[in-house]
Image (cartoon, rainbow, N blue to C red):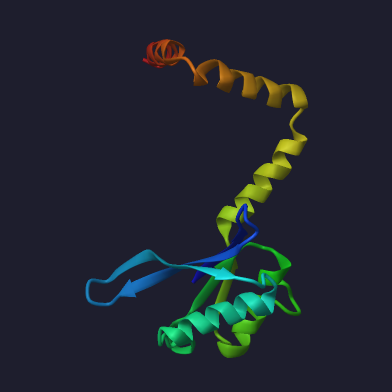
Length: 150
């Protein structure tokens, strides 16, 4: 199960739940969007209760079927004392937990850009803007680049 909590413009909290399924009939693993749940409490206990209530309402035997958990690295999700991960591990001691690689990569990229001089970042932005709104410039660049690399 992969979860991500977000708040929209109207200050409504949502919890997106993705599940990775193993279809034993065709030996296929696939990710499926399970649900988007409105919730009022984004703290660890609130997120955990929201998920458990959803599973209960839909008769999902999560203690038997859930083998992995992934989320962003926020303390509510992965804190060492009281987090969604800790709460699920109380129910499922063998649960494999992993911080979401996408969120981790965003943090790495964000940190890396702080090490780049501002002039480089500005140059990259200007190059993007130069090509963004001009089909002619994009076409010329593509043509010249293909010629350059044969």
